[in-house]
Image 1 (cartoon, helix red, strand yellow):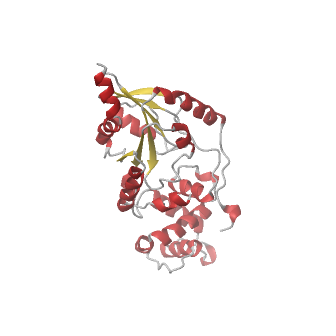
Image 2: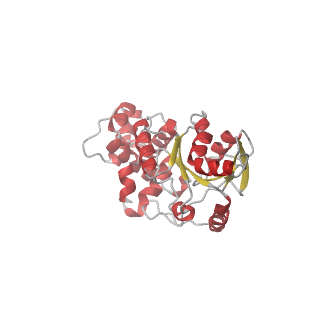
Image 3: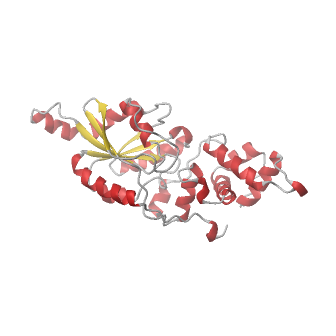
Length: 293
């Protein structure tokens, strides 16, 4: 795959610049920052600006969509973030799995602050946490589940949550909801590709076949058995994404005139089956990759 075909996004709309400034202003209002990540792609779904914005505020990482990620890798990622001194919880917002661990984890993270409040006779004073995340990591759904509200519109498109608002999470906790923000540019084209695999950026940003070839290559390298089982094709030691996409399409009978494989159709099927977990539960990034970044 040529460099010209790789996803290259230079996207920093004005409302995102404004959001960052607002977040920096609002930071002094909160006791902790909770960052939601997609457990399938914990690196690509992080905003590199967040560390700089948050400074030394107590932090929590919410590994979301664990139902779609490799359980062994989710555990490794949780250990990685805990080693940084951050609180970590694991959630699947759609089924509410892990949601009930959030409030106890926040209270544990801020136990010293709660103790100070108690000493000052302010035991009822609420804790305040800012919830951040790039578009389409499930932030609105998470906040809706925590608060029991149905107000935030959760859509499967980048950048649809607007405005900044406080939400009561009960048990003396207020959440500051913020719009999802992306970074000024994707320095590593592979970060953009991995976001595109999961649908976090619009499909029309990159050619479907190019995206599917790249995904097939990555799956063949990291989870070859899953590719073999799903598509009934052999994965060589040095796989080629394009050749495997063609082999899978041929096996499925996706042929056009002259016996050629309809690779565009197969590409759409691969992306749909990956995103719906019909292929399996995968995590495409490792903690070691974070250290390399």
